[in-house]
Length: 139
Image (cartoon, rainbow, N blue to C red; front, side, top):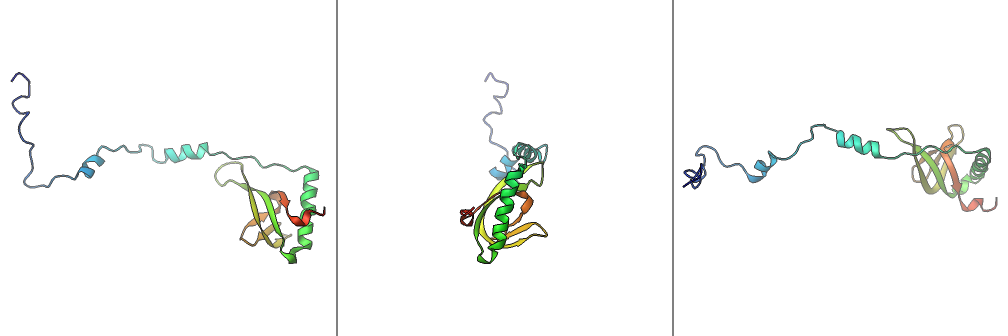
């Protein structure tokens, strides 16, 4: 025996007579990492999320959208199916994203400038980039 701890190295591990052994999962949990900065990962993820700017339509594009809206108003009783591409502002940061919704038109509220679709979407007319439908094939 030449080592510093040779006299105790082969002794059995102490087991308490009063307390039961800690479960392995509980013992391992003591050494698990913790987030010192709560919410930091969420903040980084939110910062990395991209948003885009709203495209401002020129006069010709606005006229095209207005013409299509007027055709929709005139054919509202037929509940035409349309694809509307529109801008949705982001709730947390500047900008937003463009979405496309294909549905039947339920109602167009010209005073509020909102289009209501059959699937429950409320689309602001000022946020519309383009409208596509078979009823526009004639124009």
